[in-house]
Picture 1 (cartoon, one colour):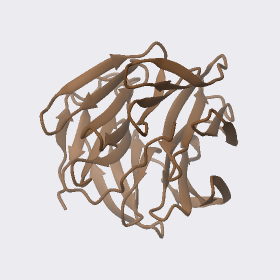
Picture 2 (tube, rainbow, N blue to C red):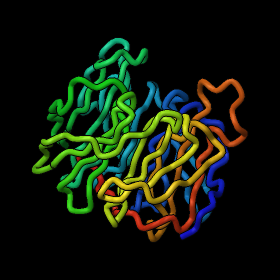
Picture 3 (cartoon, helix red, strand yellow):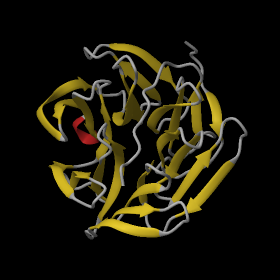
Picture 4 (tube, one colour):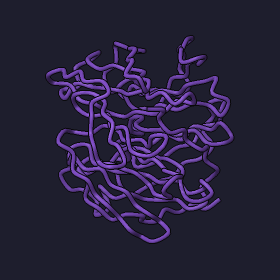
Length: 282
């Protein structure tokens, strides 16, 4: 395993988030929530693209057959390969925006929300299917963040950032049950943000105000720490041709003196073995 980070994309994103590997295009998708921009990066060529959205964008994932699903301030929309946009689920709530989201093994989108002022319990976690059906899974969320599934799909890991915990649920047929703490981040080490699960079932979690990504075993034991110079580390995902490179997004918002790399995308080559991520069925 390699230990050091490299700079994949030097940028100044306000709130870099949501790294997602798109195997169909061989590109990394990532976004700037507050900058209202969706970025792509091709590590083979270095080519980058950027698309501006009309609202704050919390997550963007590939769709089966091409196009993207976008979790936006006012709901979830679909972008077709010809750039046609339509709402899948339109539910504007004043003072609320989308945050992190993930695609489950069955191809459904689990999209989180939060209040701009981070009012406790003001956010949700909602499961959406390709026909537009939306089911609220969790309704008492403050800052809905990282979500991921074990390799066999029987466990779901989830972060509501102010709890300082990564929780784990049993998962079956699109339903979750038996919520319990998986790990708790100690005070002074930052708070949990985005996460990913690798092929060994280990959970990698980015630490906001912690300047690090940690890996926990399926038993909840800390077995690796990747220190980073950017204090506001937001999310991580495996990518590259063999899904062995760990891409990490960062933020500069709220920092009086951001590090020169804050807002960039970092990468740790050969960090581990990622899981192929399903595309949204819709």
